[in-house]
Amino acid sequence: MHRHEAIYTHPDQLTDEYKEQLWKFLSIQICIEGGMGDAKGIPPHNAMTAHEFPETRHRRFIANKLADERDHAYGLFQVAKGIGKDPHALLAAVREDPEKTRALDAMKELERIGTHLEFEVLCLLGEAAGGIASLGMVGGTYLPWSMWNARNFLDEGLTHSLLSMRQCREAVDAGDGEIAQAHYDHHYPFWLDAFGAANTPNEEAYLRLGIKTLTNTECRVIWLRQMRDRTEKAGLKFPEDPYQGKRGRYDECEEGLEGNWGAFSDQVITDGQIYGQGVLARGV
Ligand SMILES: [Fe+2]
Ligand SMILES: [Fe+2]
Image 1 (tube, rainbow, N blue to C red):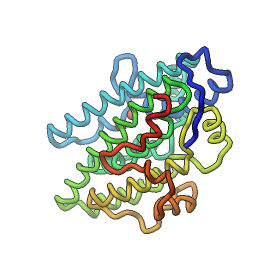
Image 2 (cartoon, helix red, strand yellow):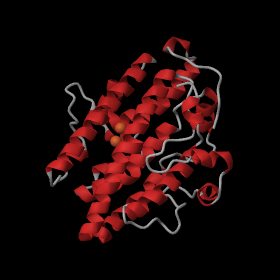
Image 3 (cartoon, rainbow, N blue to C red):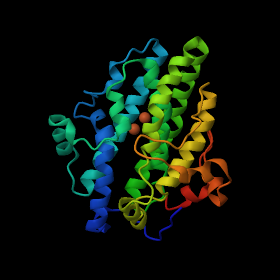
Image 4 (cartoon, protein in one colour):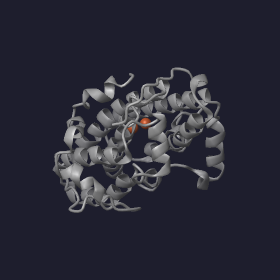
């Protein structure tokens, strides 16, 4: 974990470099969540609403989740506007030309899926990944951004992903294990990639400035450990080779997944348990 002494509470305290690096990150997140927070509060192009949600309880869950996602989008808009960026212009450009999106490959798959079960499998993997990516920014140097991530971690990392885990388990118990596993095997490598490559120039800048507090590898290891546990609880099979993504291999995570990764392993999350005190103690 990376520690910083500085703490900024207002965008005027940020350097131009800080704002540009933060915008790089924000613009990805806005392309992922931004469609859920248009002026009317309606998620217009969101594939989530197009699926079949068989029972009232499923529809309750999706309504709650969409309400959370919309709040995430508004929060992102506020942070972006605070640093002088226009999230609506970005989203308008993406709607005009979808090629301009900064969304992750894994999220692009969301547009393609068509069943409730596949949606839940994607969320088992993806909500956890989103939550852990946020965990990797809690305790950063810019308090509004750190606060947004703290909320996002609780929603995605604990609530949304765990509910989807239970929905998957239900489907497996009802006899849909094979199809659920096929969905899982399809989506898994996209989400393994989602944390970004190790030791990139972007990562170096995010860590140096305190936009992030955990490395991409640290985040990926937390996700791997968490997914190994949750996949079993969902009644599914964790990959025999868990380090192969669509974009690359991540063998550097083996030590963290299989061994005891020193002090860092104390911070690894298992279900319902938040992280080591160090993360929360850092500036929040
Ligand atoms: Fe979200
Ligand atoms: Fe979510």
